[in-house]
Image 1: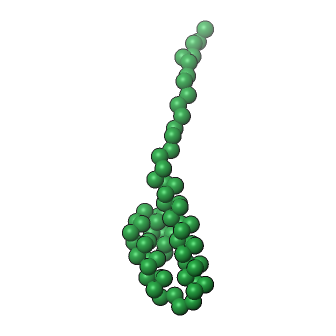
Image 2 (image 1 turned 45 degrees about the vertical axis):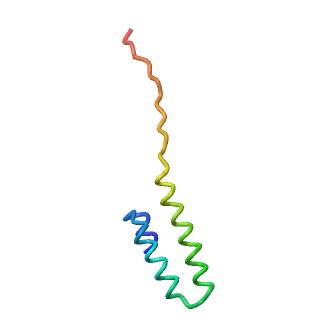
Length: 66
């Protein structure tokens, strides 16, 4: 659900709500730690999309039919 909310729907607020609910519901500490690691990793994918990519333009020379 976290992955879908962040990557497909691009809704970090919804993903955060899923994360908080999951943390509240999980009983075992190991499960909460796993969820926290997964959420942290998935969030980096969102931030990677926010970084503008630099497109390089090549200078081209006109083609002559000589």
